[in-house]
Structures are given as structure tokens and as C-alpha cells.
Image (tube, rainbow, N blue to C red; front, side, top):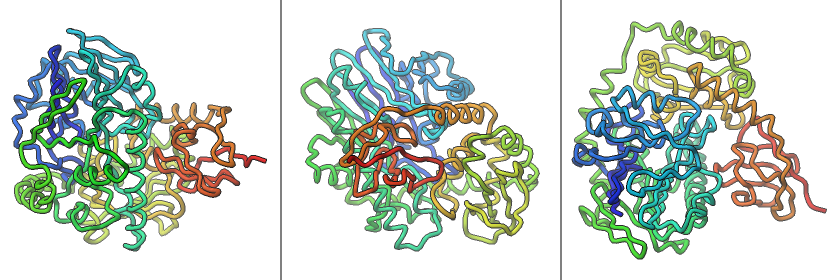
Amino acid sequence: MRITGTGHASMRIETSAGSILCDPWVNPAYFASWFPFPDNSLLDWKELGDVDYLYVSHLHRDHFDAKNLKENISKKATVLLPEYPTSQLEDELRELGFTKFFKTKSNEVHELDGGLKVMIQALISPTDGPIGDSSLWIEHEGIRVLNQNDARPTDLGIFAELGHVHAHMLQFSGAIWYPMVYELPESAKTAFGKQKRDRQFDRTWRYIDDLKADHVFPIAGPPCFLDDELWQFNDIFGDEGNIFPDQGVFLEEYAKVGGTNGIVLLPGSVTELSEKEATTTHPTDLAEFFKNKKQHLEEMRERKAPIIAAEKASWRHPEIDVLGELKKRIEPLLEESIYMAQGVGGPVRFDLTDSFGTSGEVIESIVVDFPGKQVRPYADEKVRYRFKTGRALIEHLIHIDEGDWVNSLFLSCRFSAARIGQYNEFVYAFFKCLSEERLQYAEGWYDEHEKAVESEDTQLGEWTVQRRCPHLKADLSRFGIVDGNTLTCQLHGWKFDLPSGRCLTSVGHKIRAEKNA
């Protein structure tokens, strides 16, 4: 089996029974804020795209690159489609010209031509990607690979049961806006960032230990930030709170916990994988490349500047009545929302500036009033959540009828946020679901989630606690860590006060716990 690195979470897997291209991202994503690092734009994407199968794990734009898919990926390829609750991924791929689909069943092994076996595990909570994320397992001639990309399954046991895995690809770096965009003192941002960075690595080590593959490939991160306004987010300033460590840092941190089987794939790197070994060749010296990271980024910034400028020129639509259009789009969804509206529990304010982000003057303030079920001008009231961003970005979201602001505005980091109290997952879940199909699915999911009675317990130190995390049902017997009276679920970092059951990191969740006599 041959694995060619093509950047970020993308790779081409070749077997004698066929080739699979995974998540081919090359063009900037999220309002031109994210670029793949290392740069993969000079690869021959026409040649890479001439494959038998295409796998797009989910709709995040650093995995689903519509321009690259349309222009360079063969429409003769059969799409390996995860079993998602909505048809949006299939619909968007059909719009790009793909016509051949193999619709998989989640957690079910399918045998394709030539003895090639695949299994896709689909995660379908409203907080998994844009209504879904997935992992791809492949087996051919006794060699097994798991491409976990940035999915966070609660248990890798189903993959391990299929046989020993020879190559495990998984995320290790940040893919979020927290804590950088929050209006906090720099010392607090650094402290929270360090906690998140450490938690990212802890989760990665746990996944690696669970699967015990022969070889581990760090993928799905980090992006790089080439716009001058976002340049400080790159991990090149010695900031221990930066959440975007690169593959070179991964190898250093992995070595500290005894990891010796890590393999980095640069764009153009090739690994020949057998049951006994993995041999990798790189297009350049690996150590030197990461040693000169800042220089590579500066060269990329110069090359990509015209692309960023062209993108920015397309965002302004001053003819749009932002307040009026948001009322048309959001108020009907507020009327239908029960669980998410109750979960948000208050008004959310958007301050819109005359720039492309947080700089510039605030020229309009709009409130999405969840209890009042309306969108209206800000009325000098207290709000739980406040976002500040460029009016042009909201204009563009309206212009393209974007149904997922998380997969556009928030991941762009072109905003700042402030909140009173704890993190509220329902705020972001709602703004992922700005279409009736998504909203109805998410409301139904939360309804079933709330109705589910978790009767099974597990023992954690001196405590008996419910086995499944109230957040996304992670198995706390594996992901739960108790420190004093605080329980941390390492899958997503949620914390609970055990004596009271209160969630310390969000609202709307409580855990059942009892101290052993």
C-alpha cells in the first residue's frame, strides 16, 4: 500500500484494487483565513485527482474544497459517502459534477472491487462537524489503515476488533477559535491556550494508545494564517498558549511520552506501507523544513497576498439590509426552535464594524433574541454572548445564503467574542443550523439526547458516576479523569463538580455522581 501526503488531512491511498483520495483541500477556507501548511498548491492536483474513489469526511471547508473538487478531481471517481442524517454532503458533491456514489452504512464493513474493504464510522451529533464527521478504515491484502482525520469517536474499539491496524492518521492540533478571539487579558489567553494545547495532546495520546497501530501519522492540522490581521495566530512566536502546534512539534511532544513510531507526511511525501514496515521519502529535508518554518510562512504570505485581496474584494454587498434579511432568515427558525433556544436562554449581540473584522468602528448592533424569538436592533441591554465582526462578512453570508456560520465566520477567527458565564454550546449549535433541515435534525437530536436515561455507572477513584458524559456520551471509564472533586472528560475537555453534579465549562448539562461510602 502506498500513501502519498497531499497536505492537511488529505492523502492519496493506492492499492492494487484501486486508489482513494481523501479530503483534498488546497484553496483558502473560512473567509481566506485558513491555508494548508505546508503549502500544497504546487502539487499536480489533476494527476492526484485521477482516482477510483473519493472520500470527503465532512463539510468543513478545510476538508470539502469545492473549487479543487470541481476543477481537478475526476468525476469518474466513486464517492465513498458517510451515512449522515441529512443529504447536504451528497447534494453539494452532485452540484460539483459527481454522479457515482457508494452509500456506506456506519460501522459496517463493505467490500469493493478487487478485495478492497472499507468502513466509515459516521458521527452525527449537531456538534460533530456541520451535522456530521467521520473516519475511514481501509483494508487490502492484510494491511489496515485508519484515517481518523479530525473526528472524535468515543471508542476506537470497533476498528481494533477488525484486526491490527498498521497506520493510524489522526488530528493533533487546534481547529477552533478558542481562546484567541475572546476579549480576555493576554495572561488569561495564554493560560487557557496552554490548557487547550495540553488537552489536545492528551486526547491524541489516548487515541494512539487505544488503537496501538504500528505507525502514527499526525494530520488534519495545523492551518496557517497569512492575512496580516491573523498572522499572530501562527505558532512561530514561542507562545506556550498557541493551540496550533505543527507536525514537528508533534514529534517532539510524542517522544516525551515514549512515542517512537510517528511519521510526518509533507505534501509530496510517500510512504510505502507493508505488514512489517513503513518506508517514507520526503520532497525535502524534514528537520530543516520545520526549522525554517517562519521563512516558509513569510514566503507563502507573499505568494498568497493577491488571493486574499481578491477574496476580500468579493465580500462587500452594501446594498443588503442586514437587519431585514436576518429577520427573514432567522426569526422563522427561532419560532421552531425549542431545545436550542432554551439552551441559549438569552439575547446574543452582533456588533458590526466597517472593516473586515474587529478593527474599525462599530456601525450597527443587532440582537438575536432567543427568548423573544426575534431579531432586532440592540437596545442597550445585558447580553450573555457578544460577537464583533465586519459588516461585510455578514453581508456575504447573507449573499451566499450560508446555513452554517460556524463553518464560515467563526472558524475564520475574524471576530472577537465576550460572554458572561460559562461556554454555551447551544449558541454555536444554533448558528450551525440556519436552515430548516438542519434545525429540525438538531432539535430532534437534543430531544432524544435529553430523554435518554443513563443508568450505567462507572467507578472513578472515590466516586460512582454515570458512565456516559452528559455532553456527547463519551465513555467516562476511558476518558474521565478525577482530580479532587472535579471530573474532566478528556474527549472535549468538559469539567464537572462532582458533589453538585454541576458542569463547570458550559450551561445546560449536569452529571450524576455519588461519593463512595
